[in-house]
Length: 415
Image 1 (cartoon, one colour):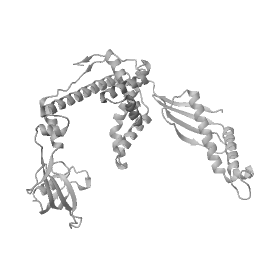
Image 2: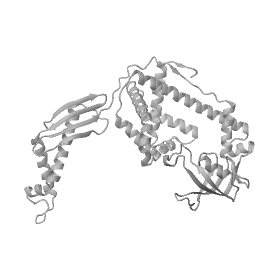
Image 3: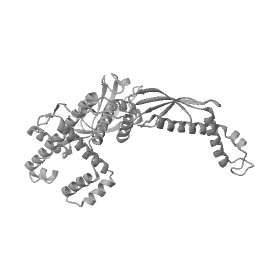
Image 4: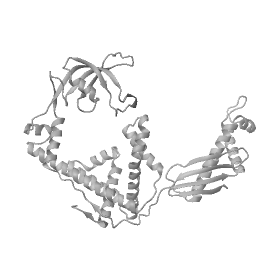
């Protein structure tokens, strides 16, 4: 097909081109579309596919014309991609379409191409390892968190205090000053679940009692229309429970897990926290390396890839429609950084032949199976069913890439 392709923009990964399809070529696609409709059309008085072509074309003029335009655009798009040698990153977009009968079909094609970063500078970076020290105080804090998770809630007859769990019937005056029936809430005081004025009102109330007075809404209340408003509030306190922490003894250690004593539990917590600190330090070193590479080797990334990642996270987190724009605005920089990171890893892995092989994945599965004392085939089947084999391959590839980078760049601090 003879078409005219005029590039109008070539910046970074963005490409724009003006495309013109001759009128006679568009007409040939109209004839093609008309023949298709002629074989399928059902017109009263004629058997299917036997109506005169002129009648079919007149009856389905709009449909024939639209299909012809789409056929011409698709063919022009394929030829433009092939002629310009484009490696597309996402589906292109058509702008400023002009499709007048008897005239050439004209439109501007906007697309993004796959980036091919040169990454010419990959060494000479200075990276600092920040190992966190797991102190006795941090161990005790973690032990206290475990105790808190195992705590029981016991009813009390006293007025509630911060940290208590309460059940209340809460009423807030309507615009006319009347108090509707109370709505039940269960909350932990001091946890920020209610505004300070309402929590104060609750703490003034004894179990089974009712208190009401004017409460002022804070100036930073999320709903701007309610900021600084003063309303009559009634609180009926139906239940108060106070947290009872379990004793820190060997019985508690055995309840938590396979620990015979509190000291064994402490040792296990220390080991877990140390391993977590090591993983965080490793991740931080890798993050620094990526930042240095990006600074030394700037390149553009397709916006379509970034938006696709943002959309995936919104679906994962179940972001409601009303929050999507705010989430996208906040997450966009992180998503763009992730796209750059992945592209850098992929580029180095391909260039240096560091991509993990199937045998590498099998070896990792063998190690996992030995640690669990199960058959490797069983582990493989579980991972395959969960769709995690590619995840393992990715982890192995990343380990290889960062190992290669660390050989070329000094890291201050203990490895």
